[in-house]
Length: 367
Length: 267
Image (tube, rainbow over all chains, first blue to last red; front, side):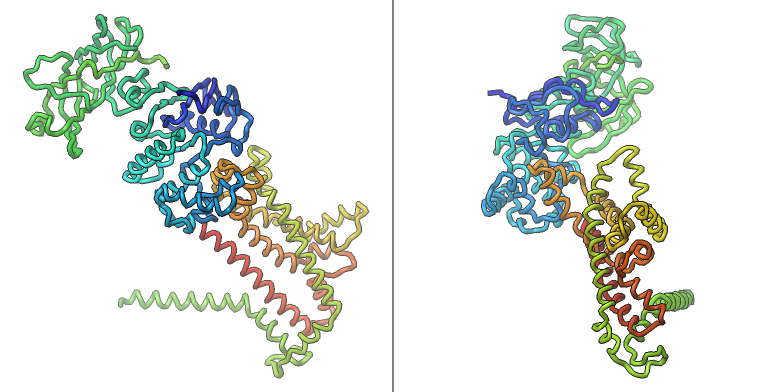
């Protein structure tokens, strides 16, 4: 069953003349892990705050379980939040923090303690129950914050960049932990982040946001492999941008001429009407580029000057210059690159761009 | 060891000597006062020839002085109550107020502390004279509360600046309403600022003279009483009561400062 736990219906939020959310509609399905992905200022945190009740929409309706909740205050909603800076109560112990929310559900003291122990065990901090909350490390604090929110058994758990203050390794660890917790509890998670990798790793669905709009909503592979707009293509995943002009229309593809003179074939997909002469931007991911064998007669080959080879462990990243100004990057496993590439720095190499990996978007016009 | 080390040692001694001198300048008069309070003789003379608790015993019999002490304690306690009950909500309101009004209030709420107290006293006296409210300890309480209120507001306001607004939201997020949030989350984190400023207000009010001078009716507070005793001459009895006051005040101030500092470390 695909019922919506949260439904935002044409929600707008304005602060004075500043439009933060612009006629945004969104359905969060029960039990899913949905990520709002976007840069700061795109409206993702405001969306979260509207769901939690800390912010009221200027226009539009917010439904929780099908019930209109626009006027319901935050403390009456079965929605809980994990804050970016943990927001643990500094004057309380870990256990008191975790059981705090149960006070208002009239749970007796002893039962609260028992449930807090249970929750802390779940996040691996059972032995810290009587510690002062300020005495924990960042990762531990975040786990306590998670336990404190989950103990309320919310309909929806909102997470506002909860891992952004942690170091990279711990972040990876907690990503998997969060995902596992979500799967085990079956609680709906709405997660806010600007980190696209985080979004790809954890989410069932991703909503890519820009300037108060959702630009694309779909599974991680949809968003990553089938971007619908130029913004999504550029924002999700590293990407090379090649600007050019349509010079020929074919059955399911267009031929685009680059300023360097190279010609590339790109499938049209949903790019809309691309007439001859349209300025377009081609997007291609560094890992989809290949160094062509010298004698290959493949199509979609550009000549580029090899400027640098960066060692990334099992991968290498090549920086290349096409024509006068355009710089592109190519990422490939080291053992798949031609041998002795290091000796060809400053020389030209042929780069093959498989047509399937190219996305053509009309340039200039807003989305 | 180089010659430079010797020079810096010389400088250190100079600084130490200066520090000791300043310290003596600050505290020697008080020490002399305390010493004289234990003097047997009626006339102040140095060196002290005989020591006694005579003047402290006399304090126990001085009804008038005891009444003044009692009045002072009453006024100080009332001031603490009024300034706390009004100052804490005012500080909370200041945090919420944005825009021009908020900025205006933020810049002006210190004013009563800056305006010379005798002017505040005089101004209030003029206002009270126009009305039918007679002068009494109540008007003293009113005047002093006005003067000391900024201390509470400043302390609590400063603490609120460092208070993480997310804590308030986290509390409401977890099901607490505004009132529960105030008592369970805000107040425990503001507690030492409130207690610390209350102690300061208590000590300051206990010593206050200018405002009291203008606004009191028939009753005297302790500083007023001492002042009136002085017109007859400095008696060792005054030294005794002054020594006790200094002791109590220093104790309270230290407690207040310690509480404020303790919290600063924790947050």
